[in-house]
Length: 137
Image 1 (tube, rainbow, N blue to C red):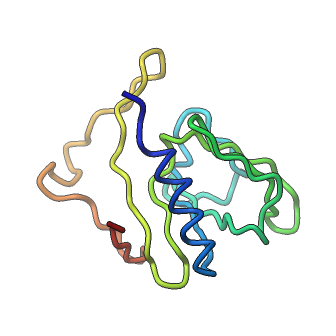
Image 2: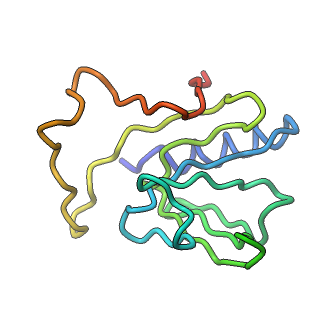
Image 3: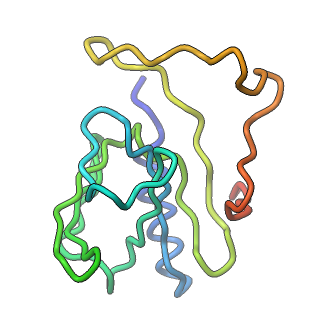
């Protein structure tokens, strides 16, 4: 069965924009195939403002999200495979959805295993300073 992630990202994007909010994408910048401007990611992640006023040529399909955006005044083409999207939420109120990590697709590079000093499987990591997100039902 196909992943539900790209369908949910498109639906939530439309819902956020329809409610006059700013859609932000939290992206795993180290995921294979991700094309984002170098130097803007932090801790292997990047938050992208994907509002219609901030991007050009937005294209969302079942494989990826792509658009042109400006970083430091310089235009960049971005390409984000659907599996690299960790969350989509409204900047104004944090409403949106966080996604679980998907297993790698056959033929893609192996994902690294867990570190010995990392969080246990019982507790999801909760980095400080991140926005609080709520699951939309």
